[in-house]
Image (cartoon, rainbow, N blue to C red; front, side, top):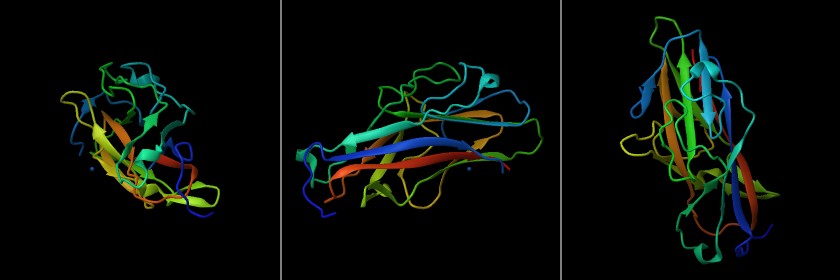
Length: 210
């Protein structure tokens, strides 16, 4: 597919955010202690499945939220980063009901690692992506999507600001019997001439513990 100047409708990025758990860094911003319990992991990326302030109710959720952007013609070739929007409607913290991911447009990520064990092991949150987003045979580097870790008031995100990579990224460690949360605002860095199309890809977040 030849590169050509895309019109307003022709350059659109869609990144699907998926959560995964597995069995197998100290947190530096917003964490809340929770009671110890039988060994369990919970990860919420966007919409989750946990009753407010009740970690015992946490369960599986098949929802996959998206972040999207359509680059307007006036912004093409300028290098001006474009803010991405999300279909996730989560703005409050599931652990205490505080307004955390506001205003809307940010992606909430929360997790816990519960155990009754005496060791000080922690869980590790990672994210993996393919090297590119694709639209047919055309591609855009996944690294052209970045995020800023934000939160309301004094409550910063556990996950620091960064960008996707073709390699597995370690984002943060979650200490045992704590609730860790982050609020991410995604942007398309708009790096230069790109082929026209609607480009899609999936970022998979995984929480693992030893």
